Length: 132
Image (cartoon, rainbow, N blue to C red):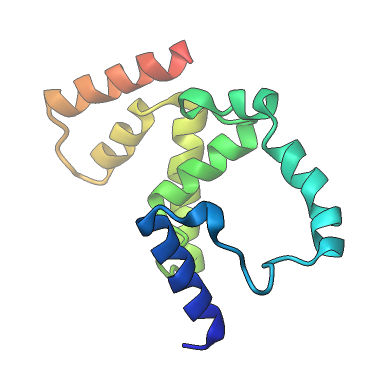
């Protein structure tokens, strides 16, 4: 832990002590030239009109929605091979295009018994999906 981590600790202590208004970084985290370049981008990305489109777990476009489904089946933080990603993509595309009922059909074709609760769940999820 170098001087930077000490600065973070001192800053955190100032927050806890209620003296953050008096705290001053010895070396600002960003120099003025970098700040000048990235500040307009930050302000644009944090504009309320842009962020409002993301409320209620809605995505900005269909690609984001499909990608999110794929990574639900094959999370990015867990190493996976091409076959796993391919299967995750098949499932995601099925749900994206037709809902959850095709997934039950796939499981049935694999010999997995599907009960009434699974059918009811899939039907409910599809209703919600269509409403959106």
